[in-house]
Amino acid sequence: MRTTQIHTPKNLAKFKQNLLQWSQQFDDVVWLDSNNHHDQYSNYDAVLAVDAFTVLKTDYFDAFERLRDYQNTTKDWIFGYLTYDLKNTTERLQSKNYDGLAFPDLYFFQPKKLFLIKDQVVEIQYLNMVNDEIESDIESINHTSSIALGKSQNAIKIKLRIHKDDYFENIHKMLAHIHRGDIYEANFCQEFYAEDSCIQPLETFKKLNQISKPPFASFFKFEDKYLMSASPERYISKKGTTVISQPIKGTAKRSNDKDEDTQLAKNLAKDPKERSENIMIVDLVRNDLSHTAIKGSVEVKELCKVYSFLQVHQMISTIQSTVAPETTVVDILKSTFPMGSMTGAPKISAMKIIENLEATKRGLYSGSVGYIAPNGDFDFNVIIRSILYNETKKYISYSVGGAITAQSDPLKEYEECLIKAKAMREALEG
Image 1 (spheres, rainbow, N blue to C red):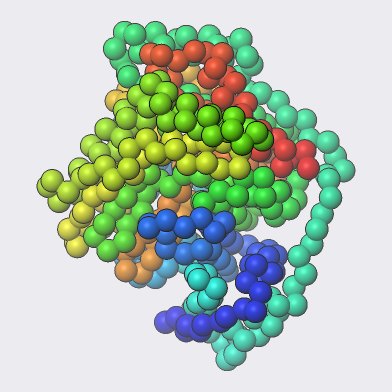
Image 2: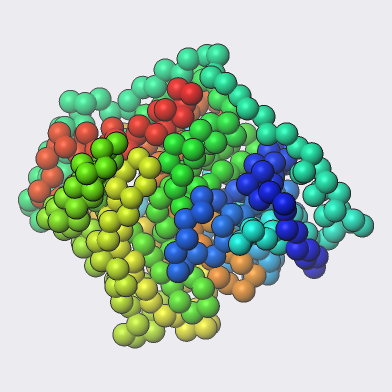
């Protein structure tokens, strides 16, 4: 049974800063922040879930069925992530590439303490509350100081898992698959990593978030493992019987010159290669959503619309469907995961080729983090523009990728990867 209390802070921005700092005392933390981006599909401005009451941690085998059982058992808010490698339970696939992070394939927890922030109001929900615990915690949060930390004393040496010449060679192999008709498009990713390195995860997240201020930022802490994400992309959400997915395909750099920046956005909107990338994934998402949709309800609400973020312009489409009331969360997730923007088309063929050409197990990168509400509504992002950290192994990782189509120029694809990697490198260099 959850106890609910409404709190209206005098200074919401400061309360949010303090709240995130206060959360670090707990072993399980999920912080989701929209950075004040608002659209018609928004649910909350920010959410904090801490202090696990129950936990589901599993490998890919029967992972979605275990999630279904867990959700049915808790009948409560649950927060967690899905790694890319859950593809191995939805299809006859495998992940045998190098993994320096060793994250579980799926991790969800039922929080004892939950803070839902929207429109200057904080809704606080506590599970099995003791006496005046909420009031006591509000007092602690208000008196928590946000610690400002400087540069890391130990320089972090970033390495590439795939070097430039090997990258070009693999892109040409992928293009050969496309020209042969095996696939139309595939997302090819590469890892940047640092070994024997330590970071301060919360401070690193703050730096990364400040650089990008994206609509789907997230900080996830469990045990000795951390996700620091500045994701601009929503994977999928459900509100009532309405499901939406918003794939991103198409990227252009920003410029400090206003006129040039405007032109860069216009060029992206008209770029035939970028539009074809996006439209192919839109078709894939329409097909994925049709598995659970009421017949005839799948529709494209926005096609190839350009949105501007601090680091890049992005081309985003919005696809919507309607599901029957009895359709479950897991039905929808299982039939759409992994998201098309991170795989390719046709999806299964693309995933097989990706596995053969990439050098790293993707794990949480290109997976998803989010929540499922007690009523079955949910919201999940796409884990891109993200830093992953295993504190015990002292291993830091961030990956970037791009969609390869028949029109792809390997050099331009490589340069796009470097643009996408810039924010993570800056956050780590401090």
